[in-house]
Image 1: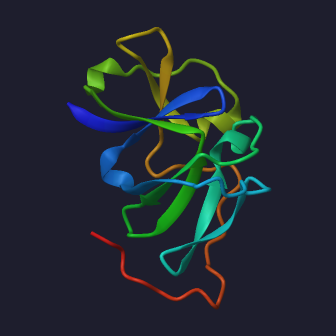
Image 2 (image 1 turned 90 degrees about the vertical axis):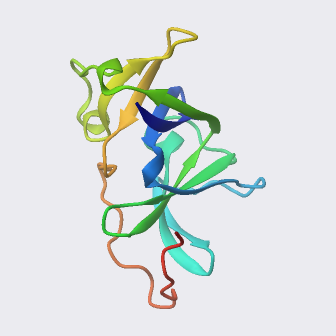
Length: 150
């Protein structure tokens, strides 16, 4: 069994492996990123951010929560989401491949599982997340380098 963070972004319920998550926090009513991608200050470091509801075609008024992610190289990024439901445990056999979908969604999702309590599909994000429009690779020059929190 593996643990996943279950969250809502637009009309989609998604899953992220917990080992990729550095921090989950409330946004405190801050304005949403006006575009799909951008930068946000987090712990005195400028990180790339993806507004996931907007990326998935939904509206993006006020971001409710943000998830700080770490990739296998230690790089950090932020995704804005509508709501974090909590942790779920799923076995790899609970997932199945997805038939046909748009290229944008296929670059983001690698499998689907059904929630136990209802019939909603839980979409598992690829590791690392593969955004259709790649995030900028270099942070702004004024951004200080900080160690990745453990």
